[in-house]
Image 1 (tube, helix red, strand yellow):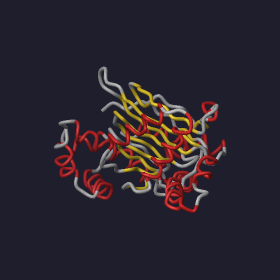
Image 2: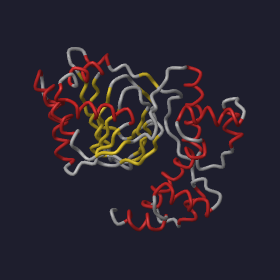
Image 3: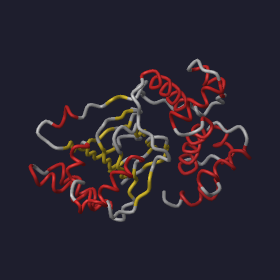
Length: 293
């Protein structure tokens, strides 16, 4: 199996969204692309992202999860994130993004009637994934927000945020993980994460990865846990299991072959990790999800 290669940026980029605001209270846009390239970045603004078309996996805080059409999330300020995926043939991905400042939020939650909305923004510090029963309705509202002008644009966004306080949702990151601007830590953790992203299908030892950032194994383990909220082995297993899941659904290879080619050296260990991560066996996962395609 060939190693997956992504176009990467070696450190999280501080995205300056204020450049786009001009005379607007928030930035709303849609775009199409042939791939979501690895771009580990953060910004002080809140962000709503709706995937109209596309699939792959998204990294938000310490979370690695698959995404597909109608994926809809709210991310709080300064949480590092990226979406990664590639299309086949002439297909394109499409996403709708709305970004708004903490000052905008403070004005909304200043009312006594805004308690539920305030709770929504508090939860966004972990990232929120919405499980919408009517995604087309949400998509149309988002397109309307992009098209609207003046105060109607603001009112539509507030109405949407209010609607989301009543939506089914789940938190994304398991720890409160906001990016701390420390150049030394920034450089190290991104060097490690990007290396793992590109090489998870190979055998990777703790010594190898610690040497990559010139640290002892014990110091590296403490550093990685503090930086990502995950242990090194759990983070690596998450990457591998995500790739396994895609191959179980979209390839005809047998489970043993897939496991070994995603970096697992022991089938028994792979099965144990898979059940922990997905609450089912690989064979049941494949049977259940293959019915959808």
